[in-house]
Image (tube, rainbow, N blue to C red; front, side, top):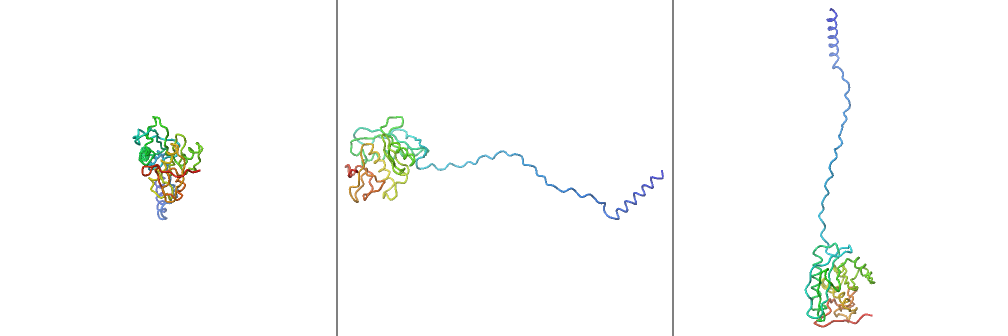
Length: 246
């Protein structure tokens, strides 16, 4: 077999020639393509829990009310007992209804209030007990709707009284009126005594003279007309009044 050595010799010659010319050429590599896997579906992130905002210091605006629980003390020393209930508009902090009830008891139990004449007494009762009237603390909008339903237009600015309903405007309760000239507690006592005075049949009165105390049945929310703030129907143990308005 002489052909095999000849073939081997030819192959060796070709290899030597190629090495002299350089490296054996290679095919261009395929371009690199970055392949990114689609992210696998992730479970939804849990909702961010935000702390509840502080409860408002004024009543809510829902048109629904919660009643103060329990019985209050008997207010006054003589006369028939008139029972009433207290309610605040929802949503409201848990402390608002009992706090409002305590302030109502404090004001109406003061000897300068309506019990000062020893002609009547008052007592707060729960929702489950009979009450001659209810004192509502309502937002401006709700108080306007309630008063309008009874034929009184307040513009959402003032409180009002309807049969068996004393409706205290929450905005006035919160901030009184600009330029009233007395602490907020004085205005609150005026608002309660004025509307409860209507409950007991008292009409509006006017300022008896510049610099004198405003009668409690004067519409002090609309201005004092030269008088000075006064939240009480009794001063120095005597009923204090002004000229009736026409």
